[in-house]
Length: 270
Image (tube, rainbow, N blue to C red; front, side):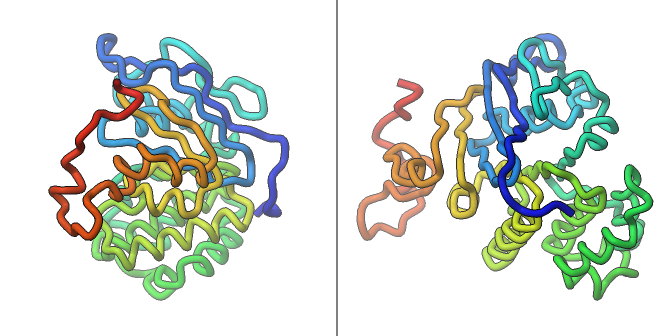
């Protein structure tokens, strides 16, 4: 485990272009920087290209018949976009995919041990760290993962990724499908993980949650990064407040229909 703080190291996506099945352009000219020691949020609606960008970083595009056709992914200045997923993990980058995807028939602890495959000598230390961060997993370490609640499975997926002590943790929609109380719990866990020295790139549709803990944010639309600002500026931006924070309805109106009925187009699409 590293000491928290920001060094000069950066995970960077530079002018990235990704195509699926040789025909479908999913990401076009996207650039994102994640300085070591920070939490960076990547926001956008379904289909914006957020998950594709994460796959490009973690080396998982081939599994989904995708390919990088332009641009680079660099870590500390060295290109990594041609590395196999296992080599990306060894460089210190680990992704927690959307939907949790635990090994349902294995126990909690067996799932965690799988996550330490690149650093088997650190299993005991990793288990101590994970059980301290996620006490419910310690209580259910011998339980079958498929019988855990949604919130517990999300903890398990995050804990499994931490078993290799990554420098960078890529989280894809960790709050998806969780009750508001559990969303708050996941948010606090992300902060705790970051405070222990792990840098986080957080993909979220829950913009309020993501911006409440990130230092910087990017917004993706139609495969492009359309906004890139410190979170304080994003939260004050009229478009972000209207289209992502749900604060554009008439004052005093609690109607979801009013919030979603926009009277103007997004500025970057005009």
